[in-house]
Amino acid sequence: MRMRPAWAVPPRAARVRRRGPRRGVAVVLTALLLAPASACQEPIVPPGAPTPWPSAHARDWQWQWQLTGPVDVTVDADVFLLDPVRTTSTETGALRARDRRLVCQVRVGTYATGDPDASRFPAAVRGAAVPGRAGSRWLDVRGWDALEPVLADRFRLCRGKGFGAVALDDADGYLHRSGFPLTFDDQLLFNRRLAELARRLDLSPGLVDDLPQVAALAPDFDFAVNQECVRRGGCDKLLPFVDADKPVFHVEYAGDPAEFCVTTVGYGFASILKDRKLDAWREPCTLP
Image (cartoon, rainbow, N blue to C red; front, side, top):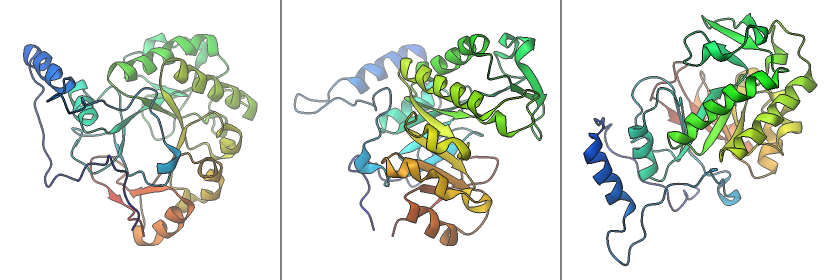
């Protein structure tokens, strides 16, 4: 069995839910967390921004993806992929205190009518409905001047809540009926611009899915997130990240981990089984 990174924290026996402290108490607790307990101890320092991904640990990460329900901060994972709007600063603070790496999921190629910033997208960039997601529509990624200020603020929200990395979701509108004549090159330029924007805002950029562009975009991104490359096929297309010692965080929503883990762990992915609702439950692949 491979050794876990030296800084990994053992799992807790039970799930713990906490109420956020009142403001005055929060200030005191923050001071206590940041101050050394004694002259010979180092202060608690969360992962820097942008989040570093040491190449020596590229195949060792364990991860969690949770978008629904109160965040379970006790899950035994090194990396947490979370919704920056739903996740509270109290939750990110608890995770940072445990030296967890925090990745926020930002939809960059779509918007939902319920998004707090939905009204900021001009009518000219609003496209076709996203199948299966009520109220969501594709965006015209060619309209960078209109999209960049809104997406930059989404990234700033991530930084403000303590995230050090961002996973760019819905960054593959050219593969769908978006309502716009998007080309491979249109999407490639947009995704590269987003990676650069994330870095300017001290965030490590990660690519979600978009397998056809992985070979071209792997140099621009620090990690990849993939859904169901075993069921859908195409896991081998993620190897440019593995070959560059960059993490690949992979999830399947069906199947037996004892079967698909043989393939994905062999490739060097960090793989888990999840419910599609992406609550706290997970079953990770175990390393041989």
